[in-house]
Length: 327
Image (cartoon, rainbow, N blue to C red; front, side, top):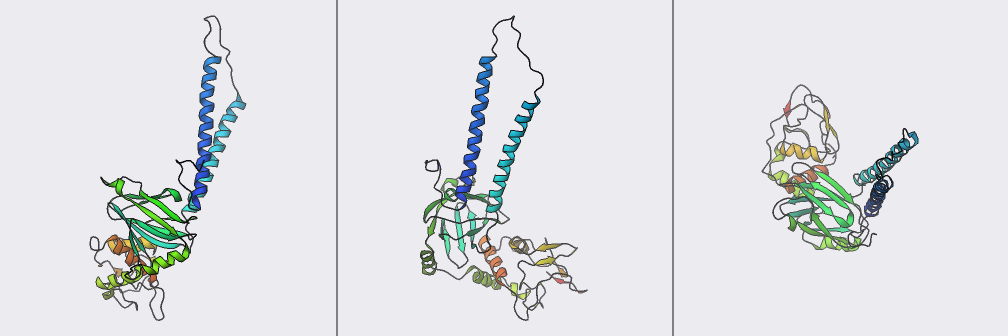
């Protein structure tokens, strides 16, 4: 069945799992469709009206039948739910050692940024056998990153990050589509994914033109935007230190906490007053409209790269005393 033209090639670890679930659902659907229409046809013939004098035989009760047609459908639906949920949860949890790549959807193209600094348009080069984690964003409308051979589909939504991951199992060239209508040139928002042998991928990374890693570009943008005037590594600036911030739990003004993940850093850049760190005032200006989605991703990677350093002040995890400072 997987060799039929209607079924794309299986080229990822998830593809067989998804296909097996699909085949099970199709089998159940076809079986019950035939059963129901067969029963309709049988009853229509078996109990057709023959004469005005003939009285039909009426059955009252039937507990066994009630139990059968309640328990069997319930059992099947629970199998479908459990199987589908297990596949979904595995697809939503990328491994820690996954290769991270940023993808930005824009009418009508896919802009891709590798951590090493390589950039691509409507093409994605990845190594064979390595788990790949994509962080998706959109600059305008909702797009959907769809790779049929990988059985992978994930929306890129404006104003937020979404993630998906896959692990390719076959070297080759595979179609990339936008599966969400995004305007009059939606059908042209297509591309290719190139799965390469690990050594060939390394040669591609080192052989292309790179302008620095995402973190390095983020550091340059951080300086160009004069963020260093307030965010100082020693914690003596008017805003919190960003050293070692990523992944920490941050105490917020007015109570409550938030985990400093990609979404929090993005929100702090574009809507700095949304979540203010305890002990600081919300005077940081918004960079909405001043920084592109690609720039935001670069800044996020730069903040993630700021691990704890000797003598540096850790990020705020509680109040700072009686003297409030700026965010």
